[in-house]
Figure (cartoon, rainbow, N blue to C red):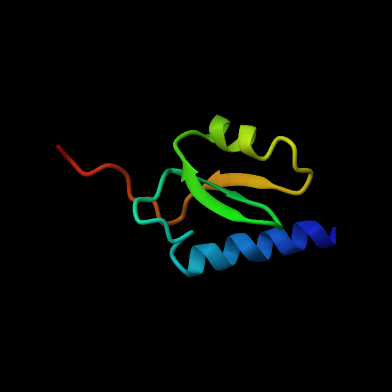
Length: 70
């Protein structure tokens, strides 16, 4: 229960601060106790990255605005 509470706080903090701080944010982020990364183009890529961790979650990047219109 405590781990989920920590992860919820991390996700909320990332939402309030504009995301993970990548210069070019990707659509998905991984949040784990060890690191936060918003460099994933797909949800599947994010899940594959945290596959070996038992305390990570993936979700939409709150800072991602989508590609610029062409």
